[in-house]
Length: 74
Image 1 (cartoon, rainbow, N blue to C red):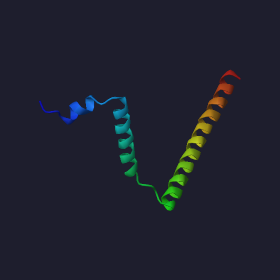
Image 2 (cartoon, rainbow, N blue to C red):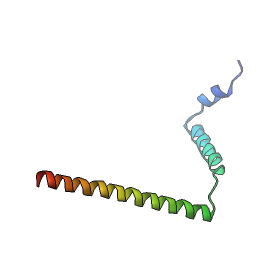
Image 3 (cartoon, helix red, strand yellow):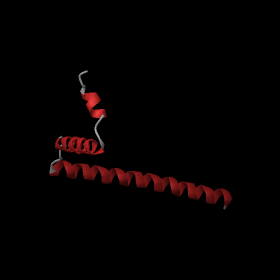
Image 4 (cartoon, rainbow, N blue to C red):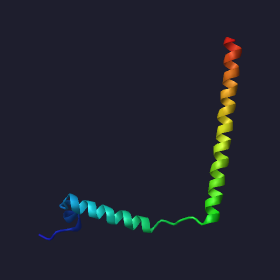
């Protein structure tokens, strides 16, 4: 009976599985594309602007809700 790759992988011990995991992680990390300085600056500005917009929206909803509750229950 010839052993297949799947059968071999199932029979690996804990150390073998750990080594395979580390090799796969290193392989994936080699594929990572890092942004340039300009891209990183652009992405950072977009995130800050988006967070400010969300903060303003939540502040507005909170303020209106507070005013409404005070007007209703006064």
